[in-house]
Image (cartoon, rainbow, N blue to C red; front, side, top):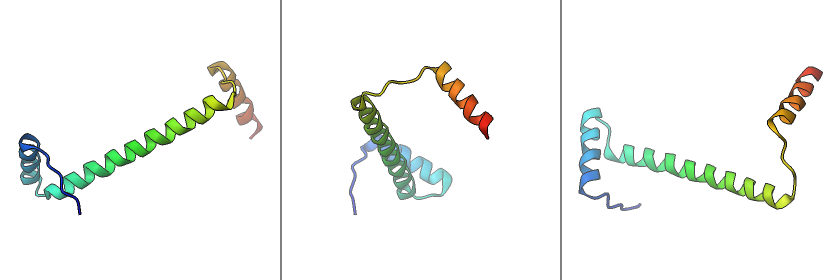
Amino acid sequence: MLTVNLGNELEKRLSGISKRTGRSKNFYVRQAVEQHVEDLENYYMALDAWTEYKNSGQNSLTLKETTSLLFIYCALF
């Protein structure tokens, strides 16, 4: 169980949406938190991958090099 103070303005906005749609305020809060947590997980996963890449010392490919390699790969299959 978690208690969150949304503040008066956000509480009013949430109540308005809830009344208009017939869904509970809890539904919208849960949906928003789930989406934000997923976004944060994706952000930190990307940040970890970027940090690992930078620390690996590998060189990146240009778009032209990547396109050429992709074309060759696709031509093989």
